[in-house]
Length: 353
Image (cartoon, rainbow, N blue to C red; front, top):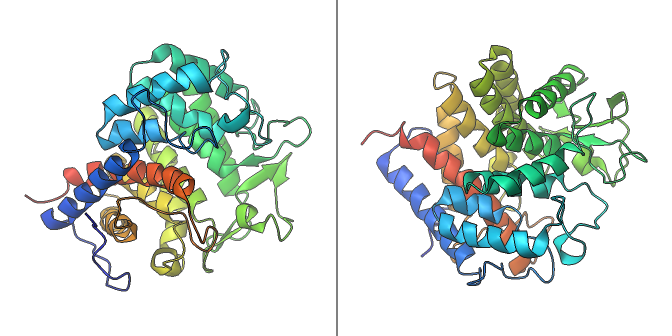
């Protein structure tokens, strides 16, 4: 069943309705079905022998409504994909990739915790801690961080999310410290965000090849808009756990970068880089229902519905991946199921019956 029956140019909704929530629920369920159809009886995800595109799927299936499949996948992960010290094994699992494993391990720690596999969650979290700069609180972007101490908003925000779930207060406090410093140091807000640090300063001199990940121009199309979205999602949760009003305001400031940006973030059918904004505004609405996030939550719920493929999957940005295969669809569908589930939960208490 396809849930994508509305042209992308149709005006975006801003008010929650039962019909809109039904569309979101149907899209989420179709995405879960697509993922679970590609998990073996032993929990092995399709394509695992080729590449790690499954790292977010157990978390997505937990919050998306298939915890049994998530548990089977985590059993396979424990047997086949993780080392004894909580890292990814080399080869197709990605343990020998040059990038730090924070972005991949953090969702596994979250899924393990949600599934009450606390020993696995603890082991993975301990490994994650080795990739957090104890001084700045940021997550290292590379495994060899002694050679290059690059730190990044995306990985730092994801580290913070797992710290919230697993109760790592010191880790979460470090992430907050990093995001606050990052925002305060920006030279060109609200139009441009430099999301990366190296040493004592922002990365301001990115090469053209690096620019996509090291500079976000919110007035331009096809940018890495997701940095501010994941920052907002973490800061909303951090404010809930700590009662820190400054963190709540900082999260709203990050999300406002997206809201004040170009409409191409939402309307460009070749880009899905805005997806984490949906997660961020959903988290912020739950944390602060009077903060004015609800119209954006409704809009983003519909955005996910319209971007879903007829087979139930979601695809990466076509300007980056013009001919996606099943491996591309798997990681993106897992991501969108997770994000849409949080939007659904936020709207479940805000939609009139």
